[in-house]
Length: 87
Image 1 (cartoon, rainbow, N blue to C red):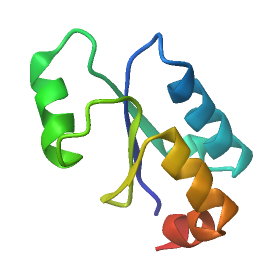
Image 2 (image 1 turned 60 degrees about the vertical axis):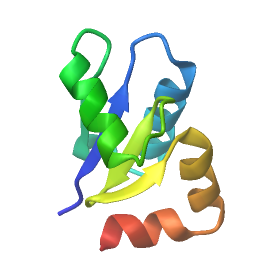
Image 3 (image 1 turned 30 degrees about the horizontal axis):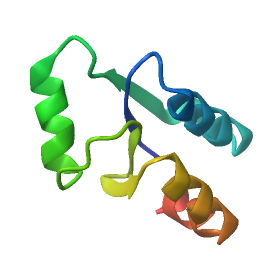
Image 4 (image 1 turned 135 degrees about the horizontal axis):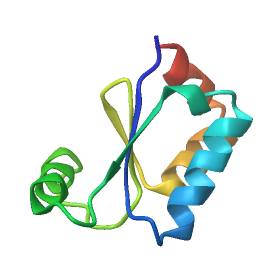
């Protein structure tokens, strides 16, 4: 089963774009959204898991760090998103 975690903020258009792309790939039902806006512990958790990347979204598929929206879109363009979600 695919697990997708997105660390996000409610005002980021890139978070919305990432969710839209995943919905287009029929992966929307596997998304767990973690809003880091009001919880410093969740923000620190995101920084630790992403290797210090501060931008949102930070996306993880099946425990693997994908990166932000641009990284997700690039993986999709290369056909890697389908492989990641099947792993």
